[in-house]
Image (cartoon, rainbow, N blue to C red):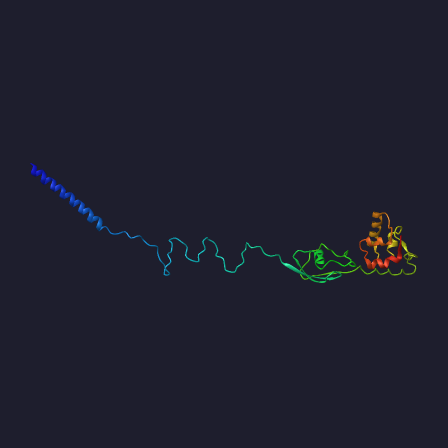
Length: 223
């Protein structure tokens, strides 16, 4: 009986040793798992899977052309060139931003000289490229009206002495050289606004009477 137990124990031991040996042989016989390396291009640089090829824009859309202007970049305002001539401090060519007005051109040329007459000039007009702004002195004196033919009526009154600026009417002022209906009206308006002329020199304060015209009127008027 004891011998049978001994034989049974030996058999169990042999089986266990066989199982252990088979397990070790199985583990040693398993193939080694080699990790897959990234694909390598001809230059040796690894290429990540799913990345865009070189030169492809990161975002969809029309590729930009080298050297093409960026539409989001603001453009510079176009300048215009104007010729300012006549009675200004620095006559010549001036460059101004587009949309400038006549007054800007005159100021860019140093401003009008004292003898200039800006009354007939539209200073608010928008300039165009290549035009000329001409600043002149007082308009030339108006020509005397032609004498009325005989029998056509009484001739226009001719002043016999200096005209009083404080009592003269519009027709009397219009007999003076260079004084038309518009300028006579401005003289009367100045007189009404200020009460009266205290000196002949105050005639210079009337719009449209510059130094040249005042020199013609000074010996012909009084207060």
